[in-house]
Structure formats: C-alpha cells, structure tokens
Amino acid sequence: MQALIEQYSATIRLAAEQHKPLRIRGSGSKDFYGGPLQGAVLDATPYRGIVDYEPTELVITARAGTPLAEIETLLAENGQMLAFEPPHFGPQATLGGCVAAGLSGPRRAHAGAVRDFVLGVRMLDGRGDDLRFGGQVMKNVAGYDVPRLMAGSLGTLGMLLEISLKVLPRPAEEMSLGFEMDQAQAIQAMNSFAGRPLPLSASCHQAGLLTLRLSGAASAVRAAHAKLGGEILHNGDNFWRGIREHSAHFFDADLPLWRLSLASTLPPITLPGKQLLEWNGSLRWLASDADTAAVRDAASTAAGHATLFRSPSGTRADVFQPLAPALLELQRRLKHAFDPQEIFNPGRMYESI
Image (cartoon, rainbow, N blue to C red; front, side, top):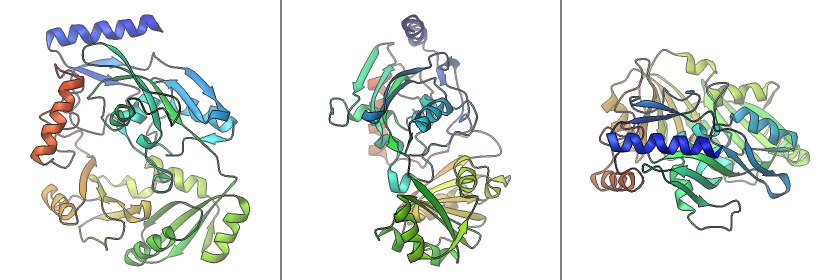
C-alpha cells in the first residue's frame, strides 16, 4: 500500500507543478452533491481495507477506499455501529466519500454528526506530503481540529488516506411509532419530546405523519412507548433506510431538492413544494421549483441556511449558501494552507475556491 501512496503523491506533485486540477473520487455515489466536477480523476478506491479494529476500544481505522458496507458489516458482527448513520447513496460508497461529504443520517440529532466521531486522519496535502492528524482515542487531542475540518470539505483540502472513527454499541431494541398531526404540531411535539428523558434516536414528519424511533434497552423502549402512545410501525428499519438513502417516495419528485438547516423550534416556513422534516425540525427537506433567491431569503430570514442538495439539471455552482466576506476569506486561507496551487476539487464547494 505504501507504493500506492507514493504513486498518489507523485500524481499530486505533478498536477501542482502543472497547475492542473485533480478530482478526488471514491465510488462516485455523491458526485451529484456540490459544485461542478472538474479535473482528472484521482481514484481513491484502490486504497482500501481495515487498518485496525479493536471492538473493546470502540475505535476503527480504515483506508479511505474501503466500502462503507464492509465496515458496517464488520461492526454489526461485533454488535456495534457508525452512530451518525451515514447515507450511502450507492452500493459501493466509501469511507473517504462519507467523511468528505460530511453527511449524517436520521440518528444525527441524537448521536452527533460525522465530525463528532472522526478521531484522526492520514492524508495527502496539495504538496503531496503524507500527513497525520489526531489519533485513535478521544483524549488524544493533538491536531484534533484538522480531522474535523476534513469532514464535509468535499475533497477540497486534501486526499484522505486513512480515517479513525469512534463507534458505538448497537441498541438492544428499536421501535418506530407513528402519530397523525400537522407540521406545526409535529415541530412542537418533536421539541417537547427531545427535552424529556426518552430514548429517541430519530424523528421525521411528512404528509401529516410524525414518525419517531426509540432505541435502547428493551425496558426503556417499552416504557417510552407506554408514555408516548402512537401506532407501532412494523417496517421501521425499511422506513428509516428510505429516509437515510432518499429512496422514500418523497424524494422521487423530479424537482430541485433543498436542504434547509434551521432552528428546530422555528414554525413552518411557507414555500411552494413538498417538505419533509428530520432532526426534531432542524433539518427540513424541500422539493420545489421555487426561485433560488426565494429559498435562500427564507432561510436567511430565519437565521439558517439553504443548500441545493440535488438538482435535476446536474451539478451547479451555487449549491451552498454564499458566505459572508470574512468567512469566505477564512475559507480561502484554509484552502491555501493545505492546497497552495488549488488543484483539489476546485469549485466543488464555492466557485471562487
């Protein structure tokens, strides 16, 4: 594997010398996300495999090209899981793509985001240098912020080689419950439930139905059901998989799909199209052909932001909410520190970076 790293490094150095862009890519399951795809492909999938896994330590280290499915199968065999419940969006989705995209699934509001579980990374920067940051235990904080920066950077800062993640035990029992209510009632209910000592692990509201997932010890799950009531959803695993992987009927619409990050307590926002709420109301999906400015203005007015998550017309340059000048300058400096020749995934996050 060291020979492969040296090959990657040589490719990066040559691209930097020639000022030619490189597109760091795993399986391509998230090619739809972010700005236009540019440059020659730097394929991360050959660099794969589990580097280290000790179940009693609740930490796994794997190479970036390792399929997520392979990692999750190994964890499940040991009664453990990736607690941020990452979406795959394809059967060959890789660990590197998972971290680079920074996307979390239904459990995120209760367990944490991708960045909260990244303990350490090995990466190649824009000079082709082989760097390590962080470690394999939570108390090892040396360079800890760099691994967190890599989560959600869409490959614009460097090529991930290896990632160490904290994992958690799988819950002994899970139960999904359904409640009929409108969106305003659901927002109030989700926030009320979140403030109580209940074993909640996911929430979703769409088309007049609030669905909650309870996870934990069997006694705790059953006690919570007795308190909350609701109809038991017998295909709960399939339901949450559909939400996580966007295979649920809501996501079938041939319309731009917006991802709105808002305060969980914010009342319903009025925009044309269909909405689906997750994370106690702090994540609101909008399938709509509404004008970009109207969606962004609505999110900004509510002190949130809107991301054009998927567009029927393909990748676009205006995917992410424009940054304030000071934040944009900070992004530029960060990019320059890791990738001085700006060869990695140019324009994938912001057009000018």
